[in-house]
Image (cartoon, rainbow, N blue to C red; front, side, top):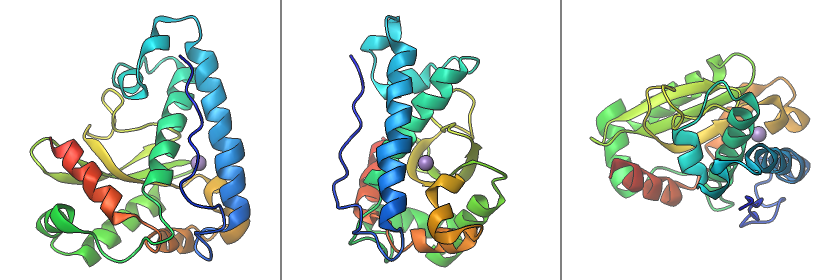
Length: 203
Ligand code: MN3
């Protein structure tokens, strides 16, 4: 069964001025669409064809580069659109707020540490906030389209939020100023959705 490119739940211009419309159109309509198409090509006529994307990531053959890059790219962007909102920003909510304070002392210190992970990821990749079964939070980063759900990747854990730091995610608007893009991300995070993912991953 082929995977579909999910529709965005908000208009492509609704994250402005933080994320510009043209970037959103190309990022979703071209990049994410290509990962989706190439993932479908990679699983076509194989036993993976009947699995969920989470199942595919969990048992990923890390030597299968087309599957690794496009399976990761498909899932990572699904997650990214979900944890963004035109009404986002502000501070974490509910249980996640509590866990962030417990694990990182304060939201400000969390922000600092997460931003550092996004800034120090050399080349293309992602910064993640992950949660483990015991409720412990981690900040990690991965290269390319790797994802903490893949085997032996970034300490495992369930991704609560992820930030795409590929240049395609920010270059049109921010050029080389990744720091400005990382800072803008905090104005569009959907903390309600992040809290739901936290609860889901904590189990
Ligand atoms: Mn991307």
